[in-house]
Every structure is written in C-alpha cells, then in structure tokens.
Image (cartoon, rainbow over all chains, first blue to last red; front, side, top):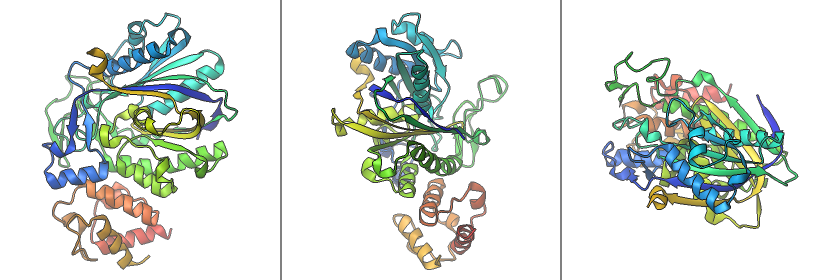
Amino acid sequence: MPTFSLEPITIEAVYACVPPNRRKTKDDPLFDSDQGQLFMKSTGVIERRVADAKTTCSDLCYSAASLLLRELNCADDIDLLLFVSQSPDYFLPATSIVLQEKLKLPSHVMAFDINLGCSGYTYGLMTAAQYIQSGAARKVLLLVGDKSTLSTYPKDRSTAPLFGDAGTASLISASASKRSMAVDAGSDGKGSHAIIIPGGHSRNPYGTFSSEPYEQEGLIRTRNHLHLDGLAVFNFALQRVPSSIARVLQQAQIEMKDLDYVVLHQANQLISSTVEKKMSIPSEKMLHSIAVFGNTSSASIPLTMAWNADKAIATNHYTWLLCGFGVGLSWSTLCFSMPWPKTKLFDYEFLEG
Amino acid sequence: MDLSDFIHHLKAEFEDFHAVNLSEQTVLNEIEGWNSMHILLLVAMIDVKYNVLLSGEDLKGLGTVKELFELVKHRANL
C-alpha cells in the first residue's frame, strides 16, 4: 500500500467557479417534508448549484483558470496542464488539450486528462508534485471539476438531490518548506460497481441496451445514468479514510493536534462527521462546504478551501491534511504545510456577463 | 455491551423519527417510513459507538433490535 513522501509543493491559488442556479433541498419535488429533513440531516445538503444544459465542466474550469492566469500573470510559467474530471467535453480528444488552446497557453505545455472523480484533486496534486520534483514542470495548472448533474437521473432520489456542479483551477509550484509532503493512496476495484454509469461506453455501447428508466430497490434511473450504492460507499469510506489518515500522519511524523486544517472530500455530512468522531478530529479543524454546494465530486476539496477562505491569515503557514475518496473505488490523502492559497469563488455568469 | 444502552443510542439517533416506542422486539425496517437514509445513520451510530462496521450483507435480513444488538455484540468481541 503506497505510503511515501514527495518534495513539498505549495498551492499558490485556488479559483472556483460555480453555476449561478441554486437548487434547495427543501423545495425538491422528490421529497415530502419528512424525507427532505432526513436527507438534509444525513447528507448535509441544504442547497447546491446546477449548470444549465449549455455549460460544461470545462467551461467552469476555463472561467476559473482564465481569471487565475490573468490575475496572477503566470501563464508563461506553466509547463503542465492537468484536467481531472469524469465529465469531459468529448470521448476524445482530451479536454485538457482543448483547454490549452482556449487558455492561449503555448504548445510546449504538456496537457493530459486524469479520469478520476472524488479522489481526483489529491491525485492531481500528487501528479503535479511529481512533475515539479522531476524538474519537468515549474508550475502546474490543475483544473478539477465535474458536471455531475449531467449523469444523475432527475427522478433518482439517491443521486439527483446530492450532487452539485463546480469547476476549479489551482496553481501549483515548488515549496521552500523543509517538510516533505506525506502521501497515502490506494485503489479497490472490487468496489467498481458501487459508483458507476454502466451504459454508453465501450463495455455497453449505446444501442446495445434499453435507455428506458427502470426501477431497482425503489430507485428509478436509466443505464445511462449514475448508479450509487450508498451503503457500499459509506462502508468503503469508513474503512479506508480513517486508516489512510492515520498512515499519512505517521508518514509525516506528526499527530492530529499538529494539523491546522482537515479537508475531506465532501461526499456527505454523515461520512465527514463519522470520520471526525472516529479519528477525534477537533471540529474547528474540519472545513466543510457540502451544505451550500452539495457533493461536487473532484471539485469539493478546492471548492471547500475557497469557501472557507475567511479563516485565512495571509502570513501564516498551516499544516493541511487533504483526503479524496470515492468512485473507483479510490482514495488518496496528503499532508503538507503551506500558507492559505489566494482564493476566489464566483458564479459562472460573473465572468461571462 | 448493554442492551438498554444500545436502545438508548438508537432512540437518540432516531428521536425525530418514530422511535419513541422502540423496544428490543421492534423490527427496524418495519417502522413506517424506514428507508436507506436511516440505514446509513444506523451504521454510522454503531461504528462510532461500538467500532463495528456493518455491511449491506449484514443488514439484509435486519430483524429485531435485540437481534441487531446480538450481532453488534458478537462483532465487537471478535
């Protein structure tokens, strides 16, 4: 099980762009009042953002990235562009390369996609750190997000009210910190069917199955849409996340009390609060955003950092623990020190208008 | 592990649900309105209080509160 250290990185900036359209759980026609209350109690989702039909994940990431590049004036220093998402623009080419052109980055910039969901941001940081450590990249533009509402069936109570859309851009560079970055990561393909869109790609191409909605265990969806086994994912998270956190703390040779901030993937509030209790994480160290954005897949960690930026003191260095986990099944946990990144959080129309 | 404590924890978890009359003979998935969200809350409570993580397989034939208690007690002692 890989637990290792990398040379330290710093996240210079995190810009996050969300659609302006808000959906409130209390107004969701899928629930009566009691069901809505129970859903909010267990998931923590009070409202979320939903992109319109024309807006893709790459549009949200593009808006975040173009503002970041303009405000930080750093386009010439980018050597690698990563796009981490499970809602790319096309089957091919890679969305990262479409974005390289759209962002007017030069052709010497390497660009590739990483097909991961909820564990994607921490895998993206880990990948960026290795390119920086090797000397292949000075700065990395890490674009992470998902338009999950594209893949949820509107009448599926287990997924449609849970997910929100977001796109983020992070600027990653080498750090002068003497403390290395501790990493713990892994995969569990036995759980590959716990979160899956079964139809529409090579295994089950369009035309080989019915696209009609069907009912299974009280849930309605089609084979083109997301299937989520909530209890299997819940068990996975409670088995893997606490042990991964423990290993990364051991690798970093620090204790829980030495951490300033813990940012878990915002899967649902019940997972976060259960991990918090099991690991005795002081609640003031835990950052959240699920109440206002829902589960935003790979975007949830950077979005949570941007949402909580009022806690930042610009001159301080903080010790961070970031943990992404989910679809795959897959997880990765990082522990490192850095100042609070420069952050910006804005609605999609803000730039376009 | 004590059955009355177990029932107390269940009642506390589901106090805003129909758990007022919950007893050792109650079959949880026969309570009106019981659904998958309650199962997640139940699994989380048991994991935090007893360090026992129940799977979907464990909960398939979810019987009475007493039977659930015995399962958790058995797992906790392994």
